[in-house]
Length: 119
Image (cartoon, rainbow, N blue to C red; front, side, top):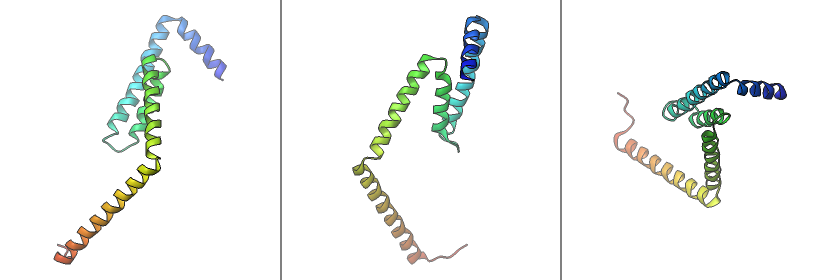
């Protein structure tokens, strides 16, 4: 199957009109997925995953997208390494527990002072 697709793509590359149409189609689909991913950063949905997929689609035809995809992969790998660092994990756990205890204390203080009177 892969050999068939490779031959097909080479045939398309030889025809300038088909090649341009193919590149426009790849650009359109890739940008649509990329922009949808950007929108999903503030809307519900897997925003970062869609952004990576959009760059992967664009990287099949465009060198600038390959560079951006490699940069994004490297950045994600560095962020993963930082997140898995034991000192950072301990700090984040300590902050989360402290914040949870503080929130619980505020809720308990409110309930003690005002009680649980539903409107």
